[in-house]
Length: 123
Image (cartoon, rainbow, N blue to C red):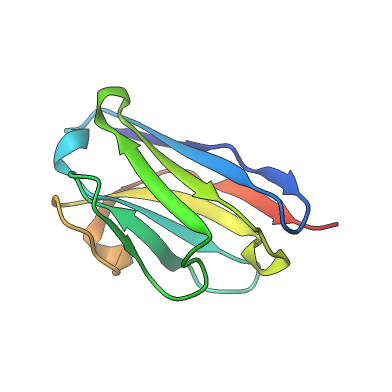
């Protein structure tokens, strides 16, 4: 089982990035995929999730209207598009596979985790 998050990097405030989460070793199309982030000195937080039918749930107002998520089941990949990035979006971003087809805000419900990719928003 593997989840590989990629696409992080340094971006200026107001810029955009697209993160990818490539999965293998499990029934990808039967599980919801969540995106989490952990900023320096803070706890990990859930930001968004996409269920197996591409229905998206955003958690919290911080990313509403700026982040979008899409899954391509044929490629076992989930994409997180981040627009209008702010310095407070700086964090390590993780993708995780839920233990079922629906989304959850609770990290404990996600059974497989990627290693994380660092996003730094700074001028």
